[in-house]
Image (cartoon, rainbow, N blue to C red; front, side, top):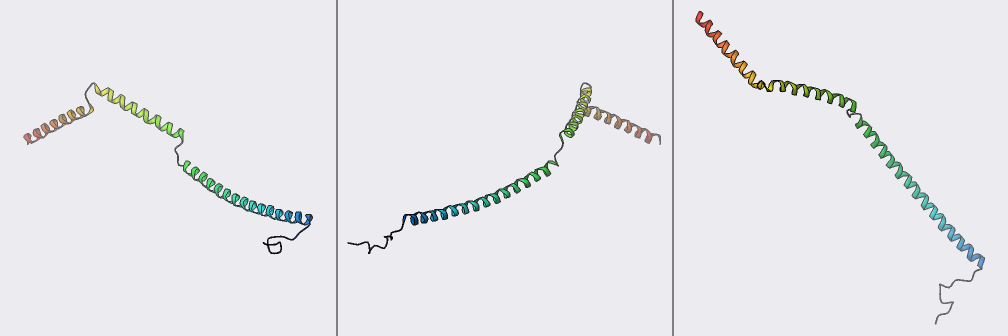
Length: 129
């Protein structure tokens, strides 16, 4: 059997005041370590937040640069009205000639008539010589 003298884990007796002071000292160390770790975590978090804000600010600048290349709505509306007006005028022009024959047919018949006229003029010129 072992006695108290043989067991190295047995502590020597201390006063209650010394016991609580030792406990208080160890708790103080734990709290100070926790505060130190928390401060370090806050510094890391602030650094990461600053990095993310820089990225967002860079993205905002990139978007502003891209937006400068966009066509303003007012300019688009004016251009669209002009294009619509020209299309309407062209449709009216085509509608005018639709009943009278197609533009291609008119141009073809006119070209043939001019060609025949020139042929007769050339023949007439050659026969008079």
